[in-house]
Image: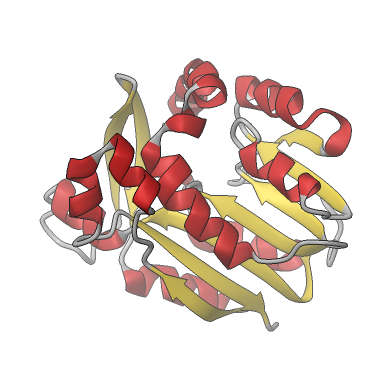
Length: 232
């Protein structure tokens, strides 16, 4: 599954680089809420975990982060992120399912946008995040909302961890449905205290591009943003 996912995201890299910035679900729904959750980054050392085509990597650097490192498992996404960020950040090809190539207690903050539902074992990934974060460091991430995946994909048992297939530009991608219980247990057991939980609503700009989904998203969330603090 992971090999296929990597290959398919290699195919999607140009789409993410050239088109996603104008997609309302990204530009006018997830990103405004995520940026608000991240807050000030000036002077911080930040890891963009699952950087994709580099939107947040560049945003972090442009907003005063002292050091920004972006990581992704797709070679083509890495190249796209390098083109976007230029010399403002370091971009590394690595897999969030494996040990990260960073020292203990290195980062002040980790952000991860719409990525952690792809990892095979979220507890293993969170354990690595804890290792490379400084004490009281922040982890802020967005994922598919568990209720959205449960309803949209008609999962028989909400509490089961289920591998699902979706399509982006007709290309298959694979991700995990996980319940709130599974997510919060993994956070707690790996040293993260949840500071805030955000179920974003679309901005008014979203309505100009997609009125139908604007109405739906004001009634039923699609993404979930979780802001945490490393306490252990």
